Length: 217
Image (tube, rainbow, N blue to C red; front, top):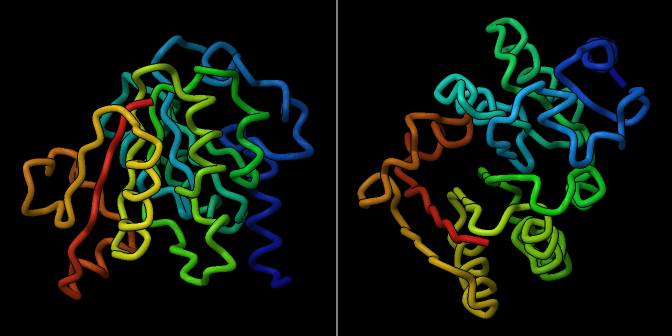
């Protein structure tokens, strides 16, 4: 491991806006994120597979009346988002370093108001289908922790992942499914929120349309 990565891991281990295994409070916040971590009763929104946390931080800037948690396992990536949130004194933004399939143990049933999945790895190989963040096993987890009527959003550049997700959702008969294969020319543009991840900027520059969908739990 490089010296740079080691320094980033050391930095996030000392930060109050990052929760990870080894922290005193790790595994004890289920049902208490608002009370203990954020110390308020505002709505709680997760970004799943948040990477560098650009979307988590961007939403935190736009919506000070809501709490945001970026979830990812890559500590070096979380360093970027947690640094931005710390420098901007965004006390409504936090990060949780875990594998996504562990989130049901970190949140109580119905504790989360909304989930965003932004530009996840499409996992194109057939043997990796179950690892896609919109595979049925993950959707089961989201539906467990999101309150009734809460929204789940997906943004992606990948047509195959998008079509796969639509097929899975239509088989599950989810509520109020809305989708577009070109977000920036659709009537769902409000959901861009003028937040652009590094990947999204690249895709838009290359002329790749951004696909978007949402459904209610």
